[in-house]
Length: 137
Image 1 (cartoon, rainbow, N blue to C red):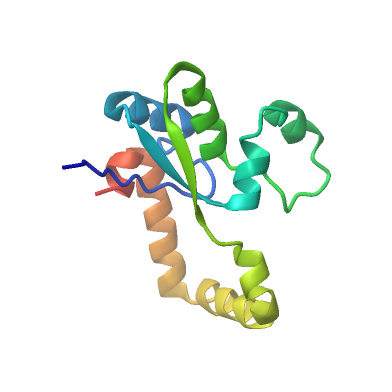
Image 2: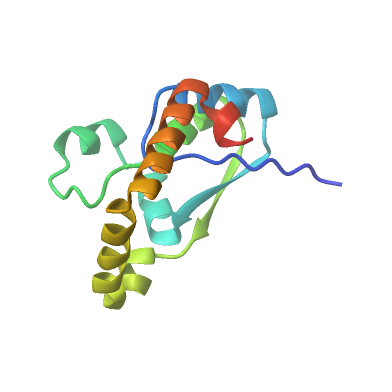
């Protein structure tokens, strides 16, 4: 029987929900496999031996291609631990590009709603304060 641990993360680091804390969790769990939420082409690019994250992060002109902080953490973890990383996502931009106007409308609708904005802010505050303990509760 295998143990599966799901670790939810956010698109950007927030307080205690950061790469340092994620790295500590990975060390504690010591996984044999990490399923990373990346499309295969991004995975192949980010995890290739020739991909220099620090250079790309400093010199990235195309802001649409931002190296996810989880990738940086996992690459650092892989330097010291034997772990297989497997991509498990579709290229959302490619699949949703024809619906871009609807997606923008949906986001504007949500973020213009006071109740949604209040809940969003409360959630972000709790994630910042309690980190993964809250985010994965």
